[in-house]
Length: 159
Image (cartoon, rainbow, N blue to C red; front, side, top):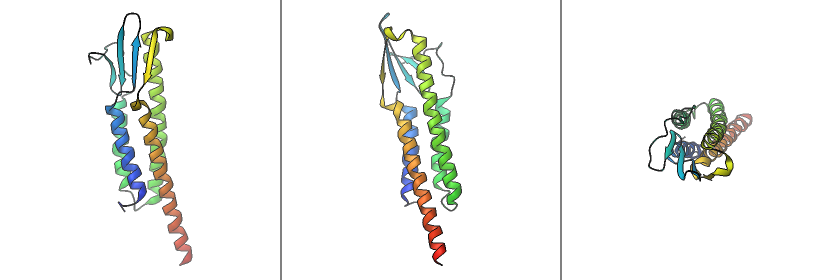
């Protein structure tokens, strides 16, 4: 059943989670002294691309996002057991929501480390919100799985 629409949504969610690992999330610009930083899934980096050693991320986002991306791809192959596939898909989009909350906490932590808000300009990049797009895609996949299950049950009633 690779041709189902929820398969496309799950593959898209896996792609989005992979992109969330690769794309930068936030840009920070300190005014005094004039420095620029970038928040990514695997740490905080200076404008030269060097990691900032005393600002490590406490949550291993790269591993978490890689796990969720692979899980999205694995859930595609659970099409023979739709109720289980729907449960796993629901768990995935709740996990993605938790990942987004972790991103927000990481942003707040880095911003507080870099200095007061009056001295810091932040720029939200698309990589920050791509996890929400993956969550929406997974939610749509779960809706499609539930619709397929309802269709199968209605066909069983007709027999």
